[in-house]
Image (cartoon, rainbow, N blue to C red; front, side, top):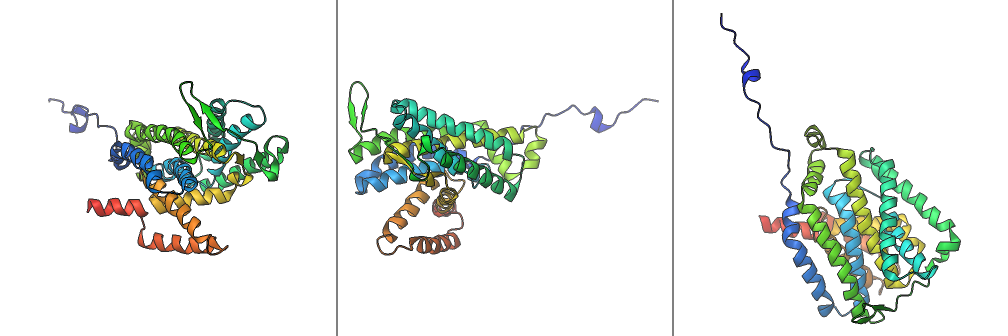
Length: 334
């Protein structure tokens, strides 16, 4: 009698392709990076308030870094102020206390933010949902009190002063950063570099894996993805982008406030991301522009601007559930 085998066992093995969620963010980033940089380059030419334009540029970068964790990886964090503030203090302390050059201080601020993101990630990454948000909030508050009590370096409650970078000598040209327009384009160079690197990250297989984790963590894990390691790496990248925004903000303001490490700052960047559209490439800059623009206008009429901004935020969330830019993209697709 001829021996037969089960069709399942005898059938040649077929290797299934690796799981890949359609990387919508990656496709948008491919075309949006250059467009975003072009829009930001033209922005001060049509917007006369240069100081506000610089703030929108910096907080847009801060929100873009936060969006990598919140929008693309799907992890709600209440601790990103720790990265923003660490970048600001890391850069500001070296300039004001040790007389370091701005370029060394800038890199140091970014690296310090990355190290703090790594530590927070190692402690918080195995938690899920609201527990992750609460753990990041608690750890960020630990960072806040650490810098608050290091008064000899940070100035404590008075903040850090003397972060003076009046001019940048590039050898062939000397940039006067006391000129607001020159300072804007000086800042834009670093923001554009960060935006380009973020776009490249989202276009890579790593970016597709991030979206796969956001859409279905269990399926991604079944396909061999190391979930914890991937999310940890994304948090470190996010922290370094936020640290760059903080370091540039220290140079912009020539001072660092302890409020840059406060949970209020984490709440603001979350609102900016939601306003613009989480999981979209250009949304964080739209959200930062809306939030800071509304704040700038409302504070001219009343001191209770936070109440009015909160009401406007609720209205925008109700009528633009995917954020302003996210809703526009949704309309365009339809």
